[in-house]
Amino acid sequence: MESLIAQSIVQNVATGGNSCAVIACYGDWVFWISILVGVVGGAILFFLKPTEAQ
Picture: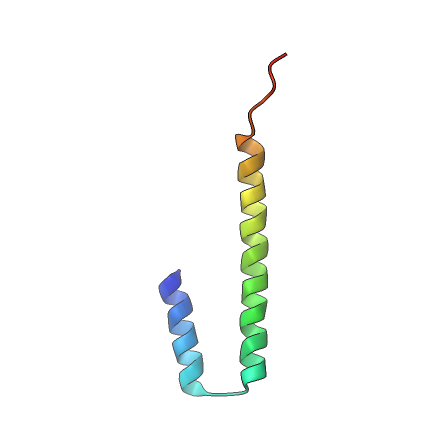
């Protein structure tokens, strides 16, 4: 995963372009990745929560 991100950054810097568009594109990726991590983390914490014995 890290190599994919590094390669995309290097390729995007090499091609140049509008820096605001580049920042917005990476902001989009960071947003969706953080949403995915949050949902997966929440599900893991929910299922790992110990049940109360009655």
